[in-house]
Length: 85
Picture 1 (cartoon, rainbow, N blue to C red):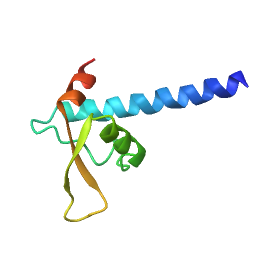
Picture 2: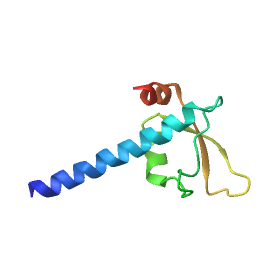
Picture 3: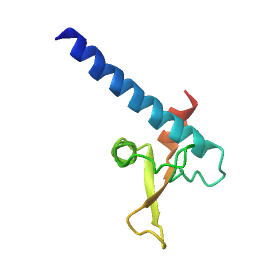
Picture 4: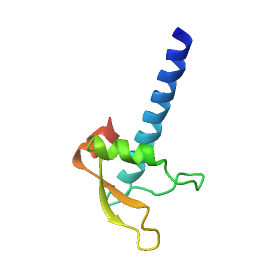
């Protein structure tokens, strides 16, 4: 059983690392806009976006006119602080 917990906690850490990388990418933009796609051209996981919004690290900014199902987000002040740690 303990090994299952280690794998689960490793998945959580990986997810947190992905989210922090996504937030750090937004730091390079003056408006704090967060990317819709990762470095491999894949859409950012919706779970990462929703977790960041729920934690107050990102906020929905506007709906994409070409793809309304995509939520364009930007960093919040809390997200900026978290990304610089």
